[in-house]
Length: 249
Ligand code: 9D3
Image (cartoon, rainbow, N blue to C red; front, side, top):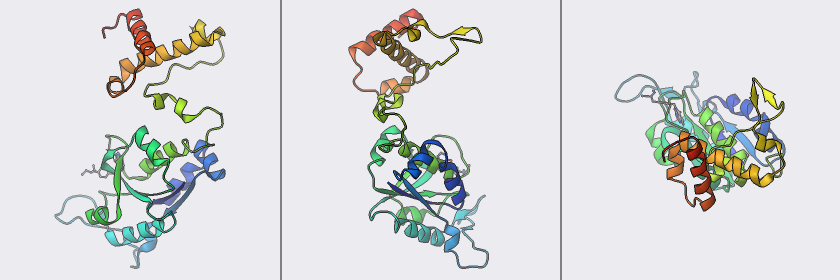
């Protein structure tokens, strides 16, 4: 997959992606990421990329001309017809289902805004989709663009070091993770649950599933409500979890 990011801070993008799973995906050529700075599409002495909002009010708005020129330059380096996505607090929430769909795209242009946002006519003419990463106020679209790239990178075939498929990941099943432990056997007076120290893999699988179901029920009931296809085993394990802790369903 080829991704181009349009940003006034291209170094933020490059620097962040060097590490961990994204760095490996880039080095392995599973992912290519380029950047385009709207400031390089200005012709005035001050390289002006922003201006005051029509109608008044605080803050500045990204001017349409340098931004559309940067989006066009970025689009020319990805496959024709690639989706152009504006990271925006007004967008639909980015989630795992959107990541699973976008992973199949051969190319993407991600547009990161700054200041109060971009001129609405750029959205009308040069943007296919708007995505938000959550209901909190950030200072620009670079971190959201990195969130999207990170979520996609780990879905590329061969990006993860182990053989486990991303389908086996906890959020792909719509549940929170179960608790994890490593050595030592006792830490801060807390012991590793006995079931994890025995070699009964079926008991371990059921314990993990029970813990994941229980934690999701308590912390993120919203995930449960939209979850499809709970099995009879899952219903049984969640009931066990809730009964052991005297929780009403
Ligand atoms: C008038 C209120 N504005 C500032 C408080 C609104 C506003 C403008 C620009 C709020 C955020 C931003 C910059 N944010 C993003 O570019 C952004 C974002 C976010 O803030 N939250 C969640 N997802 C995203 S994606 C891009």
